[in-house]
Amino acid sequence: MKILLTALFVTTIVTLAAAADLPPQLAGVKRVVVLGDSITHAGQYVEFVEAWFRLRFPENKIEFVNIGLPSETVSGLSEDGHAGGKFPRPDLHERLERVLAKSKPDLVVACYGMNCGIYLPFAEERLAKYRDGMERLRKACTAHGAKVLHVTPPTFDEVKGGKPGYGNTLDRYSEWLLGQRKAGWDVVDMHAPMNRHLAEQRAKDPKFFLAGDGVHCNETGHWLIAKSILLHLGAKDVAQMSNAKELTATHPNGDAVLKLVQQRQRMMKDAWLTECKHLRPGMKTGLPLAEVQAKAGELEKQIREALKAVGARPFTDT
Image (cartoon, rainbow, N blue to C red; front, side, top):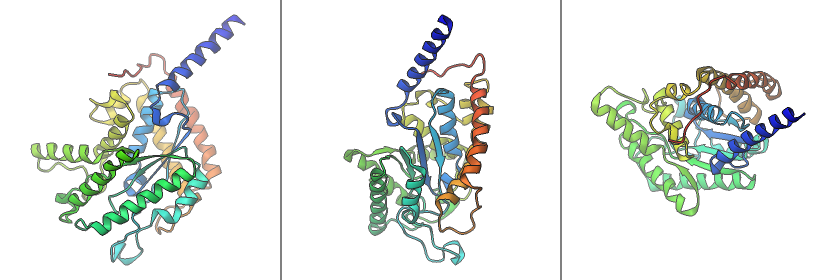
């Protein structure tokens, strides 16, 4: 009996310690919903962020839900002839209430901007649409009891993507969003770090890129997004990491954990998109959410087993 009580005491202390170390933005958070466009839907940065939390806080049960939708904007704008004239860009606000009602997030991570200026040079009227869309997003999330973590737009590479002046457009959108910190908004800046990394690497190698088409990030680009989010949340241990491989190397089963997280994420996002409904054609129809959640439960068991590896090397804060 004494041994049992001791074990329970130790388990309680470990769990409380893990909770105490969580970033303040995640205090009391059980479900994080990530919203965005095709970059978010691709999802690697979401997977890297979740993997960090799994490896850093194995006792914690925060669920990361990716409900990003390709082509989407928060501005409600769409260029003439988008997708060859097949359909206009989806507007987040068409589906936002359904997403919030069904997913019931405690925290929403919102990454918009890449599509919101519709690949045109900067114009105040388009910035106003982006601003209004962000404010509507924030108001809706608050009404549903969810906190919001805003993320500045990724880098647009004019060398690869053309569209002269669009890099400056996203610079201006990022400046506006960062300026909302004065109003109490929680904002991650990934735009400047990505711009800086691209410039530094291209100075060494003119062929270097983060997105082959100027828009859609490769794995390095997704790592930079994840790293910016994690650093904003106080994850000092990622500061010197150059890629996700260095993240998973901190645990003997790190690679296995990341692969399982990826399996679960990639299975769940189609189900969530289908459950919440949207107007974008050409998307894969997901399995019923309840069915996929049962399968995800099996993957969750495998993740927790992998995290129990003997000799796991804990993260440090430096």
